[in-house]
Length: 103
Image (cartoon, rainbow, N blue to C red; front, side, top):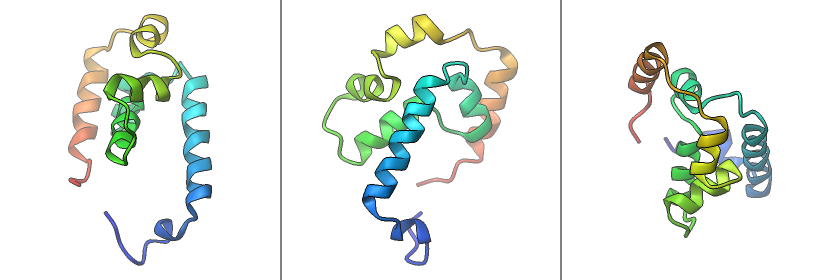
């Protein structure tokens, strides 16, 4: 979704990078914000951010990218913080993902 009139594209890279780092650090702090809930509400989660940094050129593999975003290896994060998804959360996520734009 690149539009030459989109002011986001005019944001300096250093400002965008600082905002991204703040978002990631916020999510590292807010372990109560489960990935399934983020997906159900916004259609993206920590794992999506990890995929996006790889799409943007991060040279690490999927596990490295997820560890960077989670602040620890994914398995450790899941053991410490991830709760079992309820059927309602899964349904909400499925509906939310239908709203995602096709890139």
